[in-house]
Image (cartoon, rainbow, N blue to C red; front, side, top):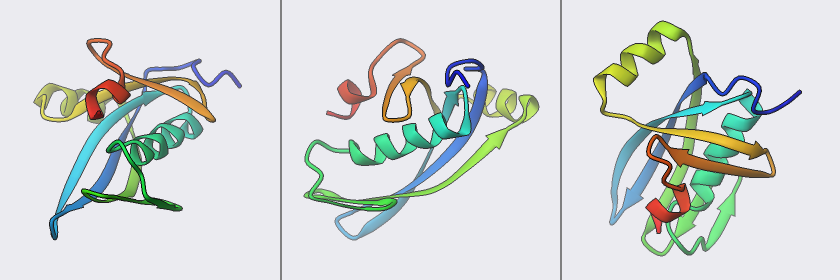
Length: 117
């Protein structure tokens, strides 16, 4: 299956980040051609949240500045996607490439790596 065949599929992805003992939830939208690509994008985001990952364990990443956990991924139907995009409070990322090397860009073409560095 072509992983970019239906880039219009959207997933709501949740992370938790702990910084200086304070935990916060972070959610974003990921557009991808398959669940495998959406999950690969989420894992890539966790691995590259900050510049230097000290330790990775499944869905948890330890950094000098804190800890990040990948919590959930939910496939959205068209109505849910439209509502969440209309509220304009979640960042949206489109993923292309392959599961081993996902490429994430926001709606303005900014690369995830440039935004998080």
